[in-house]
Structures are given as structure tokens and as C-alpha cells.
Length: 281
Image (cartoon, rainbow, N blue to C red):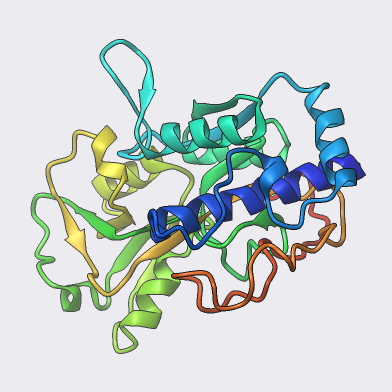
């Protein structure tokens, strides 16, 4: 189990580093990292642990929704940001990170049951951070609202007093309330996108709010970008491998203040976690 913890720590630290490099460009201020062996602060013991685990695994699965970040090309291959991110991680660790398309509910179940190794579709909320290993955000997403054809929702104020659907265990509703404190509405959870659309068609909800990456895969005409003050972060995430504390602490990856876009950086790449129920639902 210690070997798993070591690899997970390095994997998620590497995800953070990749995000940092993307934001810093070719400034030359940070070292060129082409392998996990190059990560600042990595020890010989940790490298050995990773090599031992790599010898037992042919690949790691990376679950994702069908979105603008991961989609199918005409030849059946996967493309998009997530596919490119998996390629980067594969090159960094010398073992394939294989993107896998999943629905929202099957993604959650697969992650919690350790069938899916990683995902980049969960937000690092206070409710989820104790349950998983989660990096600082690797991307931020704006929101979109789905409505029926007869809807009178035009501006954010029109949502007041209505029943709005959100995917279960997502942070969008709270993010909206934080950004629009004068706005009030009822919330209704949905197991997946199809459950949300069925509730919308039946009138159980007045609208459904989700990430802007979602509409790529659904033939729905009544949708528009909404809530311009809100961006929901997503992290590279894996289920807690029965460890109460993250081991080891990555305090030497970068000095404090060096991480553009992460002003709350504390010197650790990922959070401490606790053991979770295997269902997680």
C-alpha cells in the first residue's frame, strides 16, 4: 500500500507541474521535466517504489465524460484536452494513461470502487477533498444552462425562485450562490445527464446547469452560456487508497509564491485525506 501512496503522490504532483508549465510557457525559470525522475525533491526510495509498481501495471485508466475535452474522431480515436493530458502523463511516467469514456454516475462508481484509477472531472470541494487525493485545479470551466423551448429564462435574475437541476456531488450550485448572493433557487440532483434531461422534459426542474464542456455530446437546442461570474475548477483525482494521511509531503516541489494561478499554494501538491466508504455514494 505504501507503494501505491508514493506513486499517487508523484502522479498528482506531476499533474500540478504540468499545469504550472502550461501557464508559465517557455520562460526558462523552471527546470525542464521530461520524467518523474526529474521532479524536484523526488528521492531514490520514491523512484524505486514507482518502478516496482510500474512492473505490476501495464496502464492506468483515466475516466472522463464525453465532452469538448474528450471526444471521438471519425476514425474512432479519442482527442481533446484530456487525451493530450493523458499523453503527457504517459510520457512523464513511462506507462500508458488510457482515457476512458464514462457517464457521470458510472464514473463516480468506477472511481470509488477503484476500477477507474484517475479522473479530471471532479471539483476540489470541502465535501470531496476528505474522500479523495485531489490536485490543485488543472482546468476551470464556465457554466451553461439547459431549458425547455417555452422557458422564459433570459438573464441570471430569471432563475430566482425556480427549481434548478445539477449533477449530484458537483460544486456548481454553491459556486453560483457564492457569486450571486442575492439569488435564491431550489436545487435538484441528477444521477447523470440523461436523468437531468428527463427531469427537465417532465417539468420536475425548470432548468439544468452544467459545465460548458458538456453540450458537445448532446443534441439539445435550448442552451446558452450562463452565470459569467462563475468558473468551476476541476482536479486530477483518485480514490483514497486506505491511507489516513498523504505520504510523503511534497514541500520541496516549488518555493511558495512560485506557482502562477495558485495563490493559496502551501507547498504541498495534494491534500491530506482520510479513508472513505467503498461506495462513496
